[in-house]
Each structure stands twice: as structure tokens, then as C-alpha cells.
Length: 436
Image (tube, helix red, strand yellow):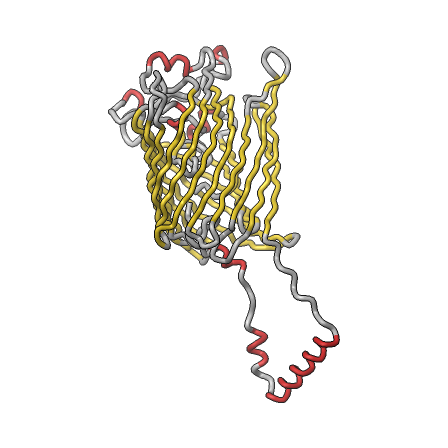
């Protein structure tokens, strides 16, 4: 979440000293003649000062997608960014998205299985020490995955008699968060936040989740609940850029706590996230090796919703998903202990200007791997034996647009993707920002 000044915005600076050096080659007499001539032209035909660059960036993206489970998804995402002084990537950014999916209902008519709506704001004090922001979000997924608990959870059930919902449930969350940070020193930051969320899962009749609820004590919090959420963290951020880092590292420790309602299945829990990122320039800023390790630990009685997500300041779905082990379906591997490692080679060789906007584009090759444990106690029946790594690999495309937006599209293969869809064993991810 870095707070202090960044070298990123230095790319906006430019200019050349060639003209000054060329002037030194003229004789003293010629120099005075040119000077008086320039003064005369300036008096005869005054030149307007150059227009100031627009301090705002405006961007609009369509949101399109869909499959047989959710139907056709559509929407729009708008981003407004107020650029700041060179030492800051921006003063503030505002993102607003509204999207939903439409499909035919089983008994006629239409239904709206997926919603992904949010308002996100991130601001920085001009001095660079304070960072503050908030988010209001509603998300619903009628095809949220559940394949069992632990690292050795079963592959998808494909018996047509069981229906398409056997490995799914409906996940619904309405949340509001305030997040902030304070720079304790040039690279050391204190992170804090407060939020509230409403979880309202729905279990499909005949699904694997319905069967496991009755026989697995680790599955808590299936009923609807309202949780206050407390966030606290520390980080050391030495990256040269938040958006497209090419050198430096970031290490953070994040804590999130949910007191719980004291009701059956609604106990409290604490989450601990250990996050480390390292960026090594191979060839200037054009070729960068990026490495990441993320471990998330859950203590207490977390609900199912939290067994496949990590961190509190940057929501990450893991083990599988666009920010975890790419290619592994989201929700495919769940547990109270999860750890992943990622390595990427990022190549950004092309830079161009179009309609007055600055762009950079390139590609990335990546390898992700991770493991989960269902509980703090040994559960070989759920986690299996041995190393048990889940992995995914692939290629991606990147497009930087202006000072504040990076678009990415990743194509990933993983054995779990092949098991879920042998005919098309590729996970496709389209999102904003690098995966880490």
C-alpha cells in the first residue's frame, strides 16, 4: 500500500540541454545579435504561454464476460485521477463500477446471478505522509466454488445427475471499509482500517457443501452474519513505483480481526498475512524479474467466506484466482493456512503516445505455486501427504495507460483447470494492476 514519495511520477519530467550547449558555440557578437533579435520579435508578436497539462485523468472501460453458470455479464468502470507533484503518483483516484449478469431462470423469466458494484477512493496528503481511502462494495457470485476443504480436496464432480451446482454455492457480500496509512519514516508505514460487512451465503440443495456442513466441524459461518472488521498493519516499502515497480522491495505484516456475534457458526477470528515482494531490473525498466511470497493464517472460527481470501488491505482470493495461483479455479483449494509463491518476467519494451495519452505495453511470463492446510492440526485426510504443491503457468499482456492505470490480461494453465474443463484447460483473467 506504499505511502511515502515514489519515483514513479518522475517519468513525467523531461527536457533537453542541447539548445544551451549549442549556444555556447556561437561567438559573443552573434549571441548578442540573436538576443536583441529575439527581444524584438517578442515585442512585435507576443507568444502565449504554453498550456498547462491537464491535472486530471479520465478513463472508462466496459465490463463484459459470462459463461453458462452466470449468463451474460455487462457493466462499466469509470476512473478519475487527480495527478499530484512529481514525488507522488497521484493526489487521489476515484473508481466506480456497476456490473451484473443476466440469464434465464430455471422456472422461466430472468435472474441476475452475479453483481460486482463498488465505489473506491484512495487519497494522499500532498506532504506524502498520510494516505486515506474508503470502499463501498456489493459482490454476489452464484457460481462460487466449493470442492471440499484442504489441500487434497476432490476434483469437480461431473455426474450430470448431480446437476451443475454440486461444486457451487451463492456467495454474497455487502461491505464498507475505511483504510488509512501514516508514514513513520521514509520507507516505514503504519496501516490501519475499520469496516463492516454482511455475508449472506446460500447453499444449493444436493451440493457438496450441503453434505459437508453436517460432517465437517471446520465449516463454520454458513449462515448470514454481520461482522465489524478491524485492520492493522506495518510495511516497509522501497519500490520505485507502485503501479509498475522495476526495483526495490515491499514487506508487510497485516492483521484483521472479526469479533464475531457469539452465535453458533458466527464466532470471531483473527487473520494474519505475511507479504513480501521483490523487483529486480534485468535491463533498465524494460525487463524486470518480480517475485512474491504470501502466507495467510486464520485463527479462531473463520467463516467459509474467508477460507479462500487473504489480507485486509488488498483483498486477494487464494489459493486460486487472478491474484493467487493463476489457472487454479477460485475456491478450488481452501483452508485456514495458505501459502503461495509467484515469479514473473515482465517485459515492457514499447512506449507510444495516442490522442495525447502516454502508453506502455508489453508481456509477462509467470509461474505460480502454493499449498493449503485445512487446519492447524494434522489432517492427512483433507491435506494429503508430501509436498502437494498446486501450480499454474502462463503468459500475459500488459498495457499502461497514463500515470495511474495498468491493464492486464493473463492466460494460465493448471492441472486443476484441465480437470474442471478438459476441452479448454486455460484460465483467462482480465483485471487492473499487476497481480502483485
